[in-house]
Amino acid sequence: MKYFDLHCDTIEELKKRGENFLNSTTQFTIQDQERFEAAVQCMAVWVPDSIRGRAAVEFTDSHLAYLETLVEMIPERAVLADSASELQKGVEEGKWVFIRTIEGGAALGGDLEKIVHFAKKKIKMMTLTWNGENELGSGCAGTGGLTGFGKEAVKLMEENGIIVDCAHLNDAGFEDLLNITKRPFVASHSNLRSCCEVPRNLREDQFVELVRRGGLCGINLYSRFLSVPDQKGEGERELLFRHIYRMLELGGEDCIAWGTDLDGQITCDPSLGSPFGAASFGTYLAERGIPEGAVKKFCFENAYRFFQSYMR
Image (cartoon, one colour):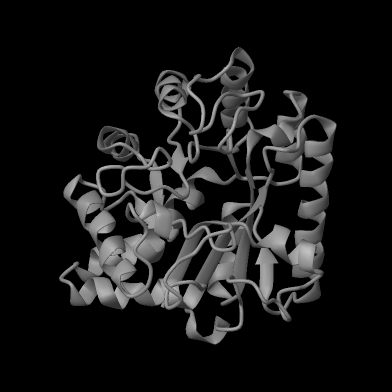
């Protein structure tokens, strides 16, 4: 079994609870490590909309340091991958491979130089916003597109090897990205608005554009992004299937991946709410008629290929 997840918020929860990967009570866990042939987790530092300026930079730095400390505690079981070769080596050694990411461009504190700062700290992907407005633009709760600062930030992110992540960005901001980006970008944890009408999900034409540009879309487990109103419990598996099936209909076989959002204040079907639970959903997809090749791409291969090509 192979698993590559584009987004979870676990490092903040671990720091808040004073826990590590061995005594964690979070949704994300490495306890099922022996069941995985390969396991990669993009570990995001989430910057709440209540934190801005220098405080946002310091908040992000402290959580990155905590992540590094926890991985250093278990070198025989986990590794932080800073390059394509380290990603490959960690996978081949059967370790949990972690990739540093940021959720919320407020982490820059309104300073373009902080893009270089975070590139040096080996950040490989960053969302431009969370739900609200920051120096880069507006999230899904707002209407404005990217600011001038935000447009410059996108260009510098690409120049410094940081993947642009449009999750949480509103429609105007997405349109701006289409006119700015030169490299493929991702929606690390977003579903389809045609299957669940909430602003956090992608319109079908936006998803198709991600496909056309060679990007990625990570499937989010949050019940609120699967159906309106929420349908919790066993029914979520069918709802999740609908999003994936429609994405495949739209030509997304090489685009879809996991973007579980574990520990991002989400509620989800308990049978799905862990790395092993999510990875095991591949069996459900196969039972529902999704070809084995497409299941393998979704669970691991698409994201692995993308990061192998993007990471320096």
